[in-house]
Structures are given as structure tokens and as C-alpha cells.
Amino acid sequence: MYEAEVNQLVESEATLLPSIVEDFAQFSSKVQSRTVLPWGEHCTECNWPVCYTSCELYSPRLDGACRQFIDGAIRIDCARAINSYVLKIRFKQWGKLWTVGNLALVSTENARKREKANLTKGAFARSLPLPGGLKRRVLSKVNYVRRRAAEDAVPSAEPPDYFVVECYNPNPRTIALTLSVRLRHDKSVRPFQTAVHVREGFTRAQVAFSEIRRAVDLEKPFEVEIVPNDCDGTVLYFGLVDFVKMVPAVNAPVPRDVTRKWKCIVWDLDHTLWNGILIEDGPDKIRIRQEVVDFIKETDRRGILHSIASKNNPEHALNVLRAAGLDEYFLHPQISWQPKSQSIARIAQLLNIGIDTLAFVDDQPFEREEVRSALPQVCVIDIAEFRTLPERSECQVPVTEESKQRRQMYLQQQHRNTVLETFNGDYKAFLKECNIQLSITALSPDNLERVYELAQRTNQMNFSGNRYPRERLEQLCRSADHGTFVLKCSDRFGSYGIVGFAVIDVREPRLIDSMFSCRIQGKRIEHSFFAYLIEKYVGRGTADFFANYRKTPKNEAAGKVFDDLGFETAGESDGLLSLLLRKGREVPREGIVTITEMTGEVV
Image (cartoon, rainbow, N blue to C red; front, side, top):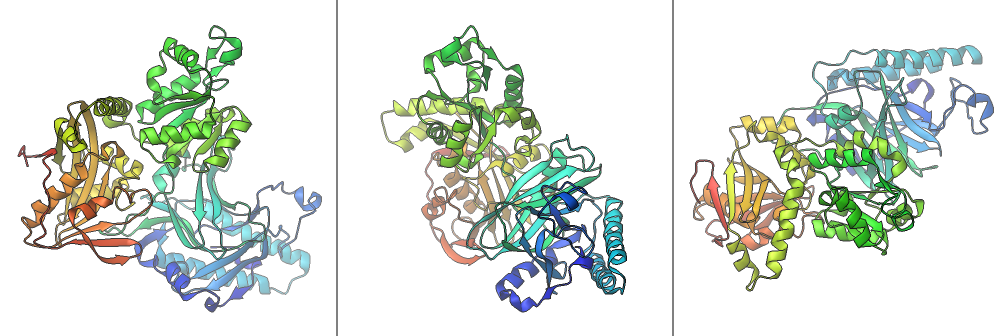
């Protein structure tokens, strides 16, 4: 719902490419209910009401408010879109989409009726034959009544699943939108914020409601805004921009969560981890910042790793950390005089995690900008913003037994690598001597929280890119049409904990989802597990076996497992490959991994 009473321009659906119309239309059948938020144009630098007389950029609308969209919000009637229209918006430099928020979900049919009523009221209000001043007051009153009704709406008993932003970007560049959800009457509380990167073409971003709720108390009055970055005069087309409840369906594709969790936080030392400069003040005069240490220990318990990128003498810096009992918390610290971007890239390589899952904290603007320029995927943070870190959504991950042991597991991996370097023989022979044990059980309430965490964090060995919400996992627990597999791994060096999750549609059979922790990458565990699944469901090649695979730059290397096992491409839909292992194809058994089912049977 938008400010129809001050936006009278309408364009034909023919102004959109048929493929884009189809993109806007295809979500309608997947939404059960949605909010009808009263979106309007607003200013990022608003100083109402003084700005109406003091701002040289003030451009009055029909109701006297300031016009922030060039030509206003232009409606494109699109009957198949979920809200029956698309808004064409050309942003001014300070323009943003803004609305009061609520969690009052209504059926998609009733939502369409409200949208239609809003358009009718808007057209009627615009057509009233009133003097200029009186008409402005009437239009302003219509806007106020609509907004107040939305703010006072009673939340639904069931919470939404996602906040959805549908956007068509006709520009030949990616545009970053900042989505913010904040309390209306307490600006001191840090808002929920996330970036939505809108590439050329159509984008549908789905932000998990659970992530927003962790950051903001949505039982209090709140507001939502979408700010385009560097978009003066840029045209974007918006469809659905609301909270939604999805149609329950176990087989539906799992929307992706755009909120990236941090896997590792990299810290500077001087004036960051401690107050003072080690090389100038000496170890006796510097003071460890206890609040930073407390944060490191808490996030370590959540399974977030920590490392160091510091320009310092490595021996002296490590001595200070040892004396403070903190050296054990930092994996692969990079303490040298090289650029910090190089140090951070090396940390990501040694931990075998994506560079976009790292955050970097430093007090120096130069160092932050050097990292930001060389590694734009890294989240760069000023230590002055430290007090906001504990509440950031990137840190909100569940605490499980696995997360508490994650740092120890990485230390065990370092030991494995040391042994491998001195091993005389080929790599597969080394793996056989590691005595790798894989135990398999079904998804259950006992392991659901760890599987949820795995699904949110796994990137390099996630073969679908899906991010399973808890509700979907609970559905799978009850589904008779699906087999679920939770993988726990150990070897002679120690336990990896739960490292994998897979879902089989037993009716085809088809591997519809599979994901593994990067800790087991290169250990042939995925090869052994897939071979186990094939034998379990089709025996010794008596039937075809299918698998879903969405190839990405992150999982492409791990995806070679399908080639190794003899899969071929049978089809493709929206980037999702359907792979086929033809019956009679022999699957190699390498004898590297011992698999034990929950019944205790060794496979």
C-alpha cells in the first residue's frame, strides 16, 4: 500500500519486459498471508517541520509534504503481481522508502482488497474540488489516517516467516539497498540493518523474520525503511515489500537468508584489543580492554572464531597475549608489517572459510579503508562502534555443544595438518590411517538446533545454497516422504561434531539437499556418504538416482564430487541442476570412511 492520494501517474504493464512481469508474478502462489504496510517517500536527512522552510531542496507535493521521488511513485498495474501493481521510483539523492511497521498478517486476497480500496480512496481524494490550502489538509489527513490505522493494527497470533523485498533494477550495475528496522520512539536502541544487493535484473530478497526479531523488540512500535545507496536519479521498480507468511509446503524451495553470519572476527591490537601502543609504551603500560575480552569469550562460546591482523613485533605481541591468557582464543594470528588486507586473506585461507564471513575491527581509519578497498567482502568496523557488536545480527547464532567446541576442532585440524606434512605416503593412505568414523542419525529435536546452525553457516559445501529455518526443519522431522540424515564425524585426532545434513525425497529417490561443514573438506567424507545413500536407496544399480545441485563459485570445487561419482546433468531450472546417476553405474567404495547407522550397523 502506498500514498495513492499524492501519486497520480500510471504506466502500462507493457513498459515492463514480459520476463520481468513473470518474475513479479511467480511469488503469488507461495505466500499465504502478508502485511499491508503504508509505504511512502521520505528523506534520509529529515528535520520536519523546520526543513519545509529551511531546506533549499524542499519540493512540495499535493499535500504539502516534500517530494523525494522524481515524479512521485508511478504505479504500473500488473494484475498477476502479488499486490496487483509495481511501483516505479526515481530516487532523489536523499530519498528513501519509509513506513510504520506492524505484524498484522492478512490473506493475500484481503490484502489485494485493501490495496484496491487504497487506490480508490487516493483517486477520490485527489479529485475533490477544494481550494489549495484545504485540499492539502485533506490529503495530509488521508495519509495520517492510513498510517495510524497501520500502526494500531493488532499483530497476528502467528509471526511472519520473512520480510520480502522484490525489486527490478534496469541499470547495468548492482545497487545496494540498506534495509533498516528500528523502534519508533527510542532511537538509542540499535536497529536491525542488512544490505540487499540488487543486481541488474530481478531480485527477490527474503530476510528471515527471526533475525529481525532478535535485534529489535517488535512488540513495541517500529518503523521500516529502505535506503538506496548512491542512487541520485536512479530508477528502480518495487513489487512486494512486506512481511509474509509462506504457504506450508515441505517441497517448496527454501528462501535464502541475506543476513551473512560472521565465522571469524579479526582484531587489531594497539588501541583495539588493548589501550596503548605496544612498541612505544611497552608491555607494562598497555591495558587489555576487558569488555573486548568478554565479547570475544562470549562469541567464542557461540562458535564464532577470532584471529589477529596487527602491525607489530610478533614475539612481543604474542608474549602479551600469553601473559593475559588470551593466546588460545586467536587462530592463525597474523602479526607482521604487511598490509592488513593480506593478513586477513591469509587467515581466511588457513581457516578455509569464505572471505565474506569475516569481520575486521581496527581503530585506524587508514587501516580500515585499506582493507575495505582490497577486500570489499569483509565487514570493516571501527572499534569506536564496539558496544554495538554484541547486538548485531551477524553475531546472533545459536549456542550448541558444537559451537562451544568449534575453536578446539580447528586446533585439532592444525594438528592434523602438522602430522600430514610429516607423513610418508600418498594422501589417501594418510586418510585411511586417520580412522575416520561417520555416524548417521535422523533429524530429531535433539539435533535440530545444531542442524539449523549448520544450515545458516555453511557456504563452501552447501550444494543448494538453502538456509533452512527452524520451522522447515520441524516439518522435515514429521515428513513421511523424506529421509533426513545428520552426520557426526570423528577421527584419531578428535571429534568434528555434527558436520553434515542431507534430505532425500524417497519417492524418486532424489537427493534434494546436502550440506557439509568446511572442516571435513578434502577428506572424502562427502564421497563416502553419497555412495552410502546411493546404495541405500537404489541398491547395486537397480534404479536411477537423482540429485539437486545449485552450482556457485563457493561450492564449485566441492561439487566435483558429483563428477567423481559419475553423475550427469539431466536438466536445469532457475539455476538448479538436476543430476542423474544412471542405473547400473558402479559407485566406487574407497575404504577411507567407516559409516555407522543409528542402528549400530557398520556399512
